[in-house]
Structure formats: structure tokens, C-alpha cells
Amino acid sequence: MPLQIISATSAHAAEINTLLHELAAFEKLPEGPELSEGQIGEAIANKNLHGLLAYMDEELAGFALFDYSFCTWQGKYMFLHEIFVRPAHRKHGVGKGLWKSIAKLAHEQNLARIQLDVLDWNTDAIKFYKAFGAVDFTKEEGWRDFRVPRSEIAKFAAANPSAPV
Amino acid sequence: MSFTIIPATTDHAAVINSMTHELAEFEKLPNGPQLSESEFREAIAEKNLFGFVALIEEQIVGFVMCYYGFSTWQGKFIFMEDLYVRPAHRKGGIGKALWKEVAKVAYEQNLRRIQWTVLDWNTNAINFYKSIGATDMHDRDGWLDFRLFRPAIAQFVGGNSENGV
Image (cartoon, rainbow over all chains, first blue to last red; front, side, top):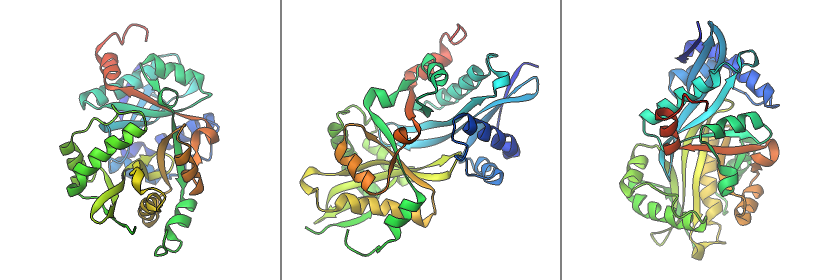
């Protein structure tokens, strides 16, 4: 059977976890994923995370993971966290099929945008996204993604909470 | 002049919404904010947005607005959407105090990160964020912020998506 795309349930947590690690390894950030399979399953069950799984001839070929957020400028939008096709299944329309399913979901809900991060050296992915009309917002308007990790949060939040700032 | 910080409520929606426009002007993106005052109020009421306001003699002089996201790598996190202090009230510790309230929320929930975007030319903001332990994720890993907007979504879903995109 050719390409089949289904909505992920918590029962797919193990497959999703496997693909997450494969993608992180490709991104040269293998230590990135910190969630357990149980936490992934729970997130899907609680609808904090949504996913699509792609199968080619019943073999797991790829996935897309996303959630919904609310922005003060445009309201509800979709954040596409991961989209990945396993190397052995590339060039068969799996990526486009996943992207189309994502776009349909966003369109049906009349969302203002789909947002995602991509690594600046990942030229194949950049071409793929631009082909579907995505814009490099870092280049276009100069936005940079900043983060403060738990250790720094703790320093700032817990130290002398009642002292004058 | 002393200030107080309190959680943002729907009563503050009108003022925060108008200050969002002030911030967008400063960011040289005056057409960015597209939400109406009632959409803003509804978002706060439904807890799609949360935040804090800084008051001097009962006037709002600054605010921070946030929402929750879910990362496939690190689970629940806070996305800080806007942090703004009116020019006349700067250098008085208000920005840091607003930020501290967000950090406390993240700390109490043991979240792995707070995330936001900042414009690459906004050196004052960048210096402030680096002083509180933030990392520029583009510098660190090479991440770029990509977006696909509603017209492009519609075109992809309804248009010539079969023709070799």
C-alpha cells in the first residue's frame, strides 16, 4: 500500500520517540530530546501535543508533531515542532503528504500561521519549506530565538524573592 | 518612584492591547498586532494568554504577556510574547521585576525553559536578556524562525498543490 497518514494517539508513543531521536541525531543535537516515552504518550492523550504518522507499505516512514499556541499579534497558530521522513523513504512524496495534512488542519481552523524552526545549515529543509511558501522570519524581520534554561530560571526566581530588584 | 506588579486580568486588556501597539511601533512593525481588544480580553479570560502589569499610582506603565507551549524535547514551557516598559519609566527596575514574575511562574512549575524572540538590532534588550542568563539559539545551534502565513496555507491547500511543488 502506498502512503498512509494517520493521526497519532498515545499508543504511538514508542514510534514517535524513536523518530524523535533519529531526527535529533540528524540535527546533530542528540541530547536534545529529554522526554520519556510515557511523557510523550501523556502529552498526546492530554492534547498538549498532536501528531501525524506516515507509513509506506505499512512501514513507519515519518512523522509530524505540532501544538497550538496563542500569539498577541495574530491569535491562535500552529507550531510545527518536528517533520521528518526516514532516509530510506525519501523522494516518494511522504514529506509533501505530511505537509499537506498539516496545512489542511491549519486551513480548516483558519489559523493565522504555521510556525517552525529550522537549522541554518539544513539547506534541503529550507528549500522544502520555501517551496510551500514559508518565509525565513529571522532574515525577513530580524527575529532571534532566545531561551533561558531551568538552571538560570532558578537562580533568578528563587534567589531573595523579596529583595528589591 | 515605587511600583507594584500584579497579574494581568481582563480589566487590563484594553490598556495592554494599546501598549502592544506601542511596542510594535518601537519594533518598527506597526502592522504586526492584528487582534481586537475583545479578542485580547477573551484570550486572557480563557487563559490562552497570561501575564503581569506594572502599576505606578494605579497607571499601567509596563506589562509582560506570555503563553504556554509544549516542546517535544522538553515538555511544557513558557513563551514570553511581549515585555514592555513605557519609555518614561525605564531604568527603574520595572522590566527586571516583570521578568522575575514570569521566572517565578516557570520555577514553581519546574519548567525546563522560557523562550521568546528578540529583534537582532535591539541591543538593549539583547544585553538585558544575556544578563539574566539567556542564550541566543541561533548563535548556539543555528536555529532560524520560519513561518507560513494564512494566504500561503490557503494557496497550498486549495491551489496547484499537485503540480510539482
